Image 1 (cartoon, helix red, strand yellow):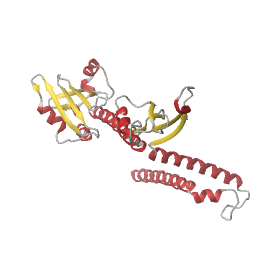
Image 2 (cartoon, one colour):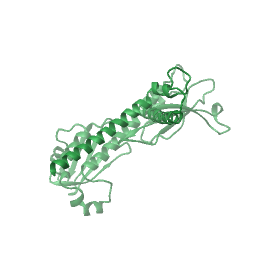
Image 3 (tube, helix red, strand yellow):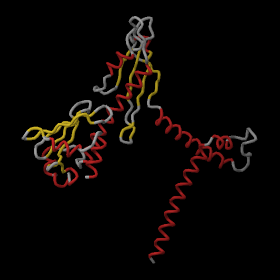
Image 4 (cartoon, helix red, strand yellow):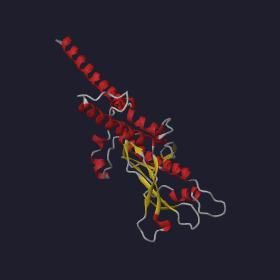
Length: 290
């Protein structure tokens, strides 16, 4: 009986694998340009002859169109993190006749596409094509004004603007910001903290929520939160009252960690938390592995 059950399980696994391979091959064939040309109306020698298979041809063409659109969407979202578009300011007194050049920034964080960020540019300088930031949805902690001064200076002397460089650097800053937020979330998850709770709730559920993974240097972690708007500093708190401040670099590298307890600086807690870690990802792995 056991051997029969094993054989049935193996057959079911094989069927599942074959179905998955069939879906992949079908998608590949439907997305191929040669397939679309073959299924197109009979205007060339390569097209299928017009016969009773017309309904089938139309069905396959529709499936091919859906797959082609899906592939284009995936390609766009994977490669086009920066896009430009034209818009019009409806304000009658808008400069340059209301002409607006928009910059769209797309960011992926924690395997999800976030709501795009927008920067709207106009040309307020008479007789000059220099751009200026008109409106934007960039987080306040991103140094947008400083980047604009450097890469989109006003028309003074021989000052030249570099819109491409401005867009690339701005998107890099936005991506770094969200990566730092993601690092804080990963730290909380690795320490067993989950969503942020009040201090009373955290202390009440300490034994069940934190577990052995968060036991470091004789204490338990009760809170890990960003300490500044840029999420470059992380506040770490222990159940016994110790508090720490971790400073993180732009790309997740650990710059410094200080832990303070009743007796002053606690270097043992620093060694227990960091070990040989040089990045936030290393700390997450340490907490996860226990």
